[in-house]
Length: 342
Image (cartoon, rainbow, N blue to C red; front, side):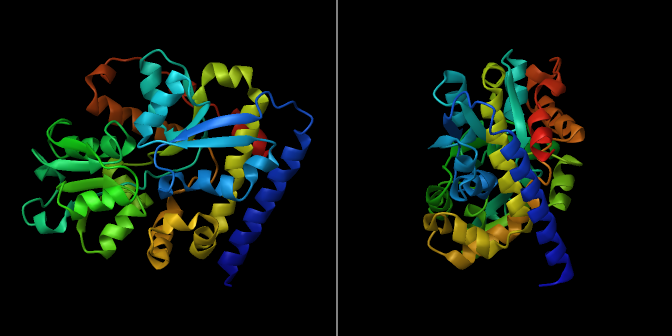
């Protein structure tokens, strides 16, 4: 073990110990709703890995929570479930909170999980000669987890930057796992905007050529010009107001997961998640994890410049946002993260 790894591990242990101390101090606070239903759009995707880590390492139980996780076909569907009242909380894209505020709905993030989108836009290898960049997407079929989800939004933003309109391509929902791989390999789509481990599997099979890669800080800056927060934990404002202690415990668990991931190896991650997440190929999953570890939040805080970046993206994509008044401060409540971290 080198000095850098040792120091990172020591820092993570110290952070986790601090969280445990603060959690113990909160045990006297009544949990208003110990049984929660949480929505997610494609749980096996590495975009949502902090949620799986919190679940599998028992962080929810440590916080006195019993969390039932409902896995939907895409992030847009989990948002619909929250608005419809069938789930209490969601791990989903930060941009959903801005969309809801524009519609007069108080939906707020309470913990950042992903600091980079970790979304990859790629073209089917056999069509790489004719589709050389995103600018060639007009009239094509683009596979996404679900229309309206972050994978679709990112592809649309890349198209607008390339001089196209957001609706110049057809967006096909292909789900979050093996169905997405199958859709590409069967030729049902021309390109894909998706996440690991789906992207890693398609890369290994030689099925795609990557055009845009936001799994790293460099790739994120290339597309967005700077920070662009991805997955967060979000809830309705009235739920947060009525259940502050429950919300705190939920944030505590996710922050513990982020601190564990900060020093975890790909092997430790692979051994923690359910075996079916490996898509039948553990070495492939290990590579996918290594590609994605940089993308997870280090602090749980959505930075102000990241909030501005996401709003700018939405303004470029949706005419309804052109003149909308958005209070970004109302889309993220960092008080729970700050209390958890002390």
